[in-house]
Amino acid sequence: MAITAHRSALIVDSVPEQGAVIKTYFDELGFEVDTITEHARGFECLANNGYELAVVEMTGGKACDFELLQYITRNLIKTAAIATAAQNNSRLGPKALEKGARSFLVKPFAIEDLTRCVRHAIESQKHAEEAERLARRRQQERRDRQIIGSSPAIRSVLDLIGSLADSPYTTVLIRGESGTGKDLVANAIHDATFGDHGPFNAINCAAIPAELIESELFGYEKGAFTGAYQSKRGLVELADGGTLFLDEIAELPLGLQPKLLRFLDEKSYRRVGGRSDMKVSLRVIAATNRNVEKMVDSGSFRRDLYFRLSGFPITLPPLRDRSNDVIDLARFLVERCARRYGKKALDLTPGLEDLLSSYSWPGNIRELKNVLERAVIISDDETIDVHHIQFDAHMTRSAGKGNGGSDELALPLGRPFFKEIAFYEKELIERAITQSDGVKSSAARLLGLSRYAFDRLIKRVDKLTGENVTC
Image 1 (cartoon, rainbow, N blue to C red):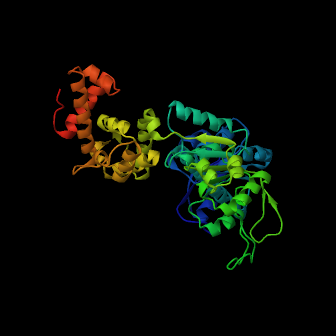
Image 2 (cartoon, one colour):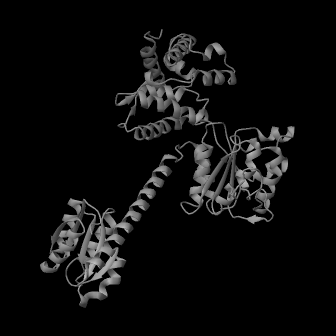
């Protein structure tokens, strides 16, 4: 007869004899049971004991029975409520269910009726807990992918995202260097428009073999090709009512581009091997880090498709152009990484903040994330400092070339990279001081720094190099 072991229930019934009868039923079902006769005591008992079931008598009088049901529903996600009432109060059933009771029983009732209600209440509560868990996870995922920053460039991007909220079918082209967060912007557009009410499906056009992209996008019918033993829906069909994100759109094979153009124009498509067209309603967001205009001129990307995709362009700034956002981004990423790895909150030291703000971040936000993730993992302190940081030498070398620098300047020459950078900074500081005849405020202006930032830079360089800047 037992439903399961190690379950607990609270019975709230103003008539002790009736509460005792219900308790014997629960004993037979394998529950550990407490009984009380005053509804007012129920709030404290439920808050302190974590019952899985509460059987609450509806009196319709002065007892706070409905308030207790509402308290359970709003505050105790792990507790399921069953309402009971005497024959003369059976009219209270609909209101009890409205206030959150999973079932309603009129006394006296048989143990079979209670068993049925208990099973229903437990099952309903499981679904409610799962829904709550998924909602919390979606909320956390949304927080984790929020766009951080207050620079004018990012505020402009956020304004564009907001303007798309009421235009659910406008095609968007997101452009920006690798690592600037194009996928975050695509998700933000989807969240602003559809929230949790529409699917978000993404495909990386560079990651799928050319011969498979069409079937991944549009699906296929049974027998369309060798191995197609059953029909399969494509990402376009799965994204109906939401968003289809085409990442690395510039890598889409030239032969498939006319079919994508037709789909964008008509929002209709045909499965591979299919004989009839299918219609969908969705938003298409494409993203690329390539110079599509040059590809159009060279004939590797269709001009008409480019114009169709770029009706609403959003260009993301590289991280080097939004240096004021670097520290806020770093704190956000460190908090997220620490939570993921089960570590306590970590602070950034002033020296590290200076280093992060002065670095050019050729790999953009992706590089910042990777650098800080490593720092969080290896830090066994309450802070992350300069010595926890290791830059990617290849990325820095590439950045040096791209900015007109030399290979020699960008390479760590036999010392840890952050220390090598400090020696170059020392050289720049001393050169500025020399050119300013020893006047530090003038030297700071030569380097584009405030006097306060200049003094902090000297202290950090002295600490890292182990040598004093020559003034």
